[in-house]
Image (cartoon, rainbow, N blue to C red; front, side, top):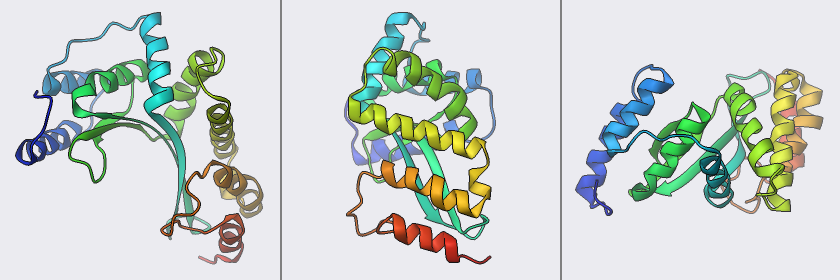
Length: 211
């Protein structure tokens, strides 16, 4: 794989990645697909590599919770927790390392980019059982994260716990517990394309929603 991508090569790689991600398969099968596409060697997970990944995530990783209006949920709003790591194509080996450490996730092109890949973990169960234990052990206890990112992580973990406790199925708990945590995690509140301009507007939407 070349270090730079022209428009034609980028389109080809996007098609190859879509094919790589198509269908159902085990982690081992998917990891093999990634190695074959990007010509990577199988990685051996060591304590040194785990700490390297922790530092890498501090710089290139992100935990977030998006909000989108939908008619498929009880209160017309869906909150989606997400963990991702971004990296240019030539650094795909770092995304592959994350894939092997977490034993789950997918690698794809970042939306709107022709040269940046993103490693993504979305299922809440995987976030709780695989991502959170890694953060607790290698980023929080080891002080790899800044105070700001540690607070953000604690909010992220709190939201996952609330989902696990079915807070999203109760209108009042959604309004008074989940939404304040979502609002605390927003980092681009001034964007014009935000689903809601502020916490109050989101709470009013849930309070008045009728399906």
